Image 1 (cartoon, rainbow over the protein chains, first blue to last red):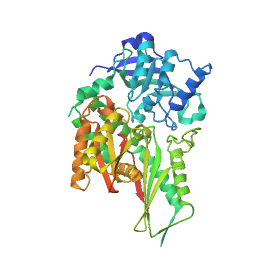
Image 2: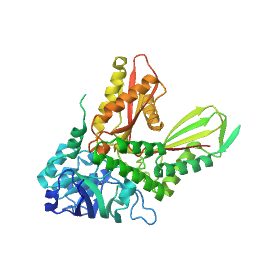
Image 3: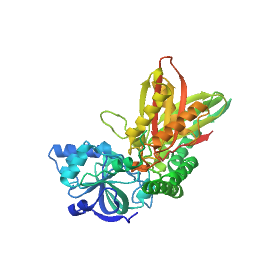
Image 4: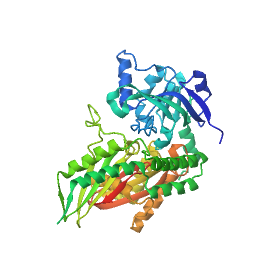
Length: 186
Length: 281
């Protein structure tokens, strides 16, 4: 297998263009956490014409609701949650500058279409490997919606967070390709 | 009559919540180890090995295997000759969950109102508790932290008798295929057949507690388990849905008597972090 590609977050438009479904990456830099409830609030804020708690331009949102940090940890276990639940909100955020998403599981065509149109990439991390993921988080800060507890928006500084490009900005989908390769029709 | 103070139940539930979230049962680790040998996809093998590495790290460093430490499902088997004293059993169990999720740095994932406020209860209560009265004077406590990535991909269908084993096979395979990459494969597939709607669903959850890959004692059921497993693994979904030959580690079917006109089937999907812990008091 080829070596993983190191990418820096927030993402430059040119970096997104280079990535292809199937590439393994190591993400370093800043990512923001958000899942179901935070997405709902972000989109409601946009609809109400309000300012978002962070600037979306070029950012990566990591779909995660972490465990609380134990003493000595920046953040507790923090593997990805199922991305599909964010699908109803994602095209709106991509149109406003969101350039990357980290999660797990497939996305609906409307999300892939928004990714192609605006140039965004979808990375998958390993679901269920939350203890290992926590090792890559160097710093975590509360940004917004603290009342949501594990669903609050946090700013994470990560170093060499491992992921795989699952859907690239051209719309290539590793889930479809991978499944087709190993599927036996009966 | 033997007496047991419910404070002991609180203590046991607290410890079991933490242990379940930190320590993957050895049979699941073993099944993952085998899967890492048989998986044809190189990426798939790497993913399974990372899952094993993650589980070992969690056990060593006493941290949760997965951040989704779930809704706490608790099975109690209460001996009919046991007298529980010192307070309300349900409250004692809830207090155990509260303490375990606090002291174990586990995520609180329960909202009180599913439809409107969706406000987090902030202590992971209430748990979902199933109580059976059994012979003897002991109390068996089984704690299952169940995450929603896999739970959301579960399904139930009221088949009719004409559908038979073939109908069950078809529904299970369809459910796993539809789940695809979402439930964190490799998965364990719990299947409940029979009873009424509610019984089938509960059986499918209990099926997940069986030792991974252990066949059903009834030969025909065991054969159906093997056939469904083979078919599920032909779907190509593979570890994390990135393609491969190991989509499921095991298929466990549990059955119960049902109505002359019914054949309910429920499929409860469990991710590779198949966590549970138990103790007899």
